[in-house]
Length: 276
Ligand code: DGL
Image 1 (cartoon, helix red, strand yellow):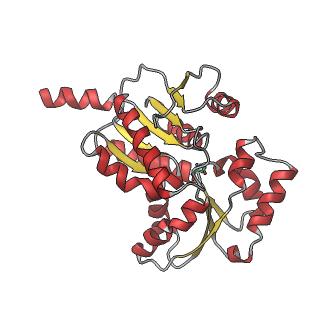
Image 2 (cartoon, protein in one colour):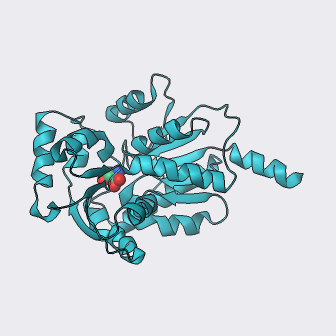
Image 3 (cartoon, helix red, strand yellow):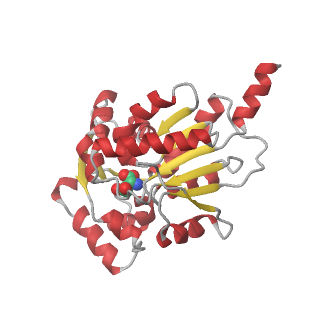
């Protein structure tokens, strides 16, 4: 009886999601579509954006501070919705959280997806310098032993471009073309959007490739993986009553605009600076 009571309290707790800025909102939005009953507590570390060219030590320290905050908010699960943070912070966050909550990253579900659909094929990856240099995708894909060849390219101009609201149009298409025309990305069968900002430019990327190449959108894959994870651990929220909550470490217009764009008018945005 007591056991049952504890389970239901936990399952009704929110899901904590964090990213360096608006990127993780693509994941949060996909999760809301897949799991409308779940309550989300989102943290965008806008004060430290971009993570992509920060040192590993700096990103790890942001990850721990944000995780602590999300634990204080009673989250049942912490989802690192940033590839750069997943690449260098996941193991540390998992250790820090221990049994207090579940921890997921955005990279593993994509690697699982490749295992099923890309054995023996060549796949491209675009991401931040931190994600590409960490080689974490490469290592996880090698560990599958499925003869998947990964060609990764750092595309550092894309995040600032998206943060400034250039999702489509001539400027963004030119920058995207410049990167995707790199000979290193020739003959790929699929391209991983290895940064949570990139689903916002999925359309121009898909337009560039036509139907020849699958654009692998980690936000949708992540939402599906989360759904089966919650189901497996009996953690579905069956009686959602609370509204979603958004926090930022620095107040930026771009973030506020994006949350409204993704989640409609009723966005509850709180300024929550990270301590030094
Ligand atoms: N959202 C981050 C990621 O997925 C990229 C943005 C940044 O560099 O902070 O890697």
